[in-house]
Length: 146
Ligand code: HEM
Image (tube, rainbow, N blue to C red; front, top):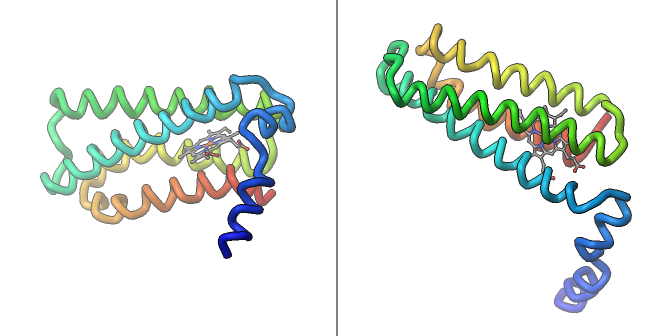
């Protein structure tokens, strides 16, 4: 078991060789880290909006908190789109099927703030649906199934 683990580590490519084998520069890991920043901001903003609606039981007031969540949500969507297409360009992948599917998830993440406002009763369900959508987005990028 230990010998197997040592063999795996020894044969694992270094970050440099992984980058070289993908034929791209330092920007690839940077864009990936920024893409993840977009993910964190997105879930912070949507989580806050959902929880406020859930606690209030009706559309929450348009106050400082909802403004902060709104700005964070918009910024997150922008970062995700720019870095997502940036990585696609760096990897010279074109726009494969899984990237179109991610774009649909992205659109859904954008539209959900309107749903949270208009149908606050759905907030309890959205609390679980949002991470499920995030899981789909991550699965699409990592497994690239089509
Ligand atoms: C709903 C918003 C999105 C979420 C939650 C999301 C999430 C993720 C996650 C978790 C990863 C894996 C990062 C890693 O390998 O460590 C990833 C990678 C990636 N995403 Fe997104 N993403 C979103 C939107 C997008 C969009 C709109 C695009 C552009 C079409 C995109 C393109 C990519 C690409 C190209 C990668 C890297 C794949 C690779 O390195 O082989 N993502 N995304």
